[in-house]
Image 1 (tube, one colour):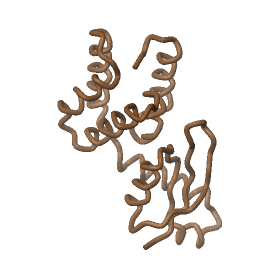
Image 2 (cartoon, helix red, strand yellow):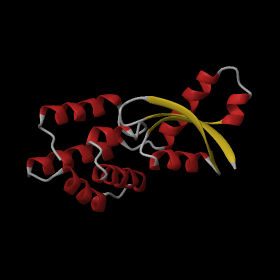
Image 3 (cartoon, one colour):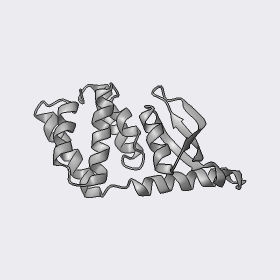
Image 4 (cartoon, helix red, strand yellow):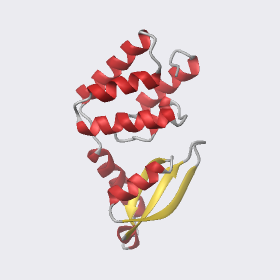
Length: 156
């Protein structure tokens, strides 16, 4: 079992650093996601111990994480369009995500939608749920969703 150092953000927006033991990077990411925190970076501690340039490894780790979770732009555009249509029809976020979960054909994005739905059911706002997927949703996308939540035009 390997040890991974991580940086996460809690539901209040506070950053925390620590270590987690897991069999793989994927397992470490899953453990951290299940704890309800937003994963910013995860690194194998063996890499960081041998490097004096930890910041570089943080950036590489986040870049690799984003590459592994990259979703085609067309899929994201379709998701956005479908969500807008369902909100216009009066569906809640939970019902809209549930509908999209069954329609989604991209396996990676289907997993993201399932995690979004699970987080929303747990009480997370849509923007907070999306923030847990930095490789999928850009900061601008998340900010636009958060703006909709604050203004009341995007409701649960």
